[in-house]
Image (cartoon, rainbow, N blue to C red; front, side, top):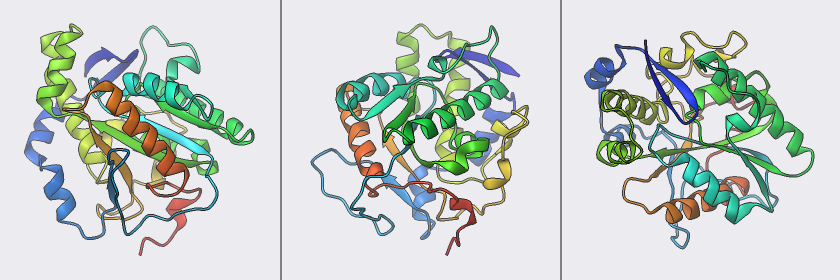
Length: 272
């Protein structure tokens, strides 16, 4: 295992991950275009008009857990701070470190146990009519959805994605060791594929995971299951303040049903 410390979290990445990712690499746009059933919502600028066949406009706002995820260098922590400033009256914005102590050597299992803590916090806030925004940690979609209590709350997920050039440039500016960069890029590539295909290398997060995780909620899905749907924001060439605005807009879209949301019991519903 190669351990890469960033985002106040120890990422454990199998040594074979980069080679496997390179062997299975496929541009995201080509992946999306090849499936007529895949539900992908690309975030639009605040003033842009957009439509999507699988969005549902709701008269009442949904109280939910909002997860901003992405690899190191994607802009998660910056987005959390900026979005919290824009939406502080409506949401509570946290990182995992705000929900409990960080152990001397954080592990994949610790991250997943803390994902459950975030879900429980969201459930508590739901009773108060407030949303929980979790941003700053590379919690994969499959981890938050497999948290034991995740069936009790609606969850919307947004992946912040940056191309390898932008990602490595940002990591170098914060003095990330050169030998770790290739692993961060590999993990970003995995998260990019995971956002659109639940069958893509699930062992990256299930191996050495927390024993209470409910992986069977999604590990049996087909690659083109339309229920596996989340928003992707490309931060490669976007200023931090603009990313925060796009994330704030996504928060509003999700809460009002115009962006993908994993509703309570989503995995029991007919995928047709």
